[in-house]
Image 1: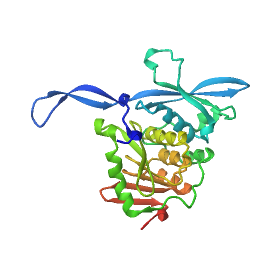
Image 2: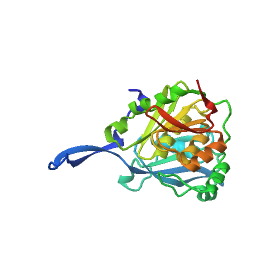
Image 3: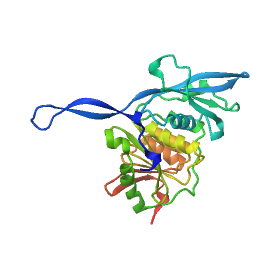
Length: 289
């Protein structure tokens, strides 16, 4: 298996269960569950000539690739723009409770990075796995410096799109073991899988992918294709646009606001990519052949 898609041991846990088949009695068995724990993301930054530290967000995630998750979150929320904006990301050493160990990470930001916490409080959304809604959300995204994507983005053959779900599914180690993790993956326009991450939260899976690409120096991702295992929400479109992705394909359906945002960004959105079919919702000029 590609090292980029190895499943971290902390990403699943074992549970004792009872299995029922048909009308038969329960039978003792064991099952593997997708792990879900809170991750507190803190930032270190310069203010008035002194180093300050502050909690930025807490997200429920599957443990593993936490550095990438933090980096991707900082980028897709408009806090940083470049890899050089981050001095380093470390497990926070000053946790107060033993149970918090491993669930707090701190990103040390370069001195030139200004964090407007007031603006962040106004623009962060109360969201769930369904994303967010409201026209003001698109306005907020525009203020977060999501660019209009270039018109020379990746060109995909119709048949290549059909091949992506099977390649994604074959690489989903976490889903294979637990059945409970979303996946996000980067492909080349020719359909080669480059990077895959899984998480109980679809937005976290995407942040991990984008964070990994950021730390590897790949951004902007204008020549890459993104495939997600579930729906395409507004939040995923916003995050993909922040990373420069021109094509977002989803195994499930896009939301109306996701399509509206993608249309304004110049992003191609494909939905229901499975079983040899898919729908093109906007900017289909990237498809052909």
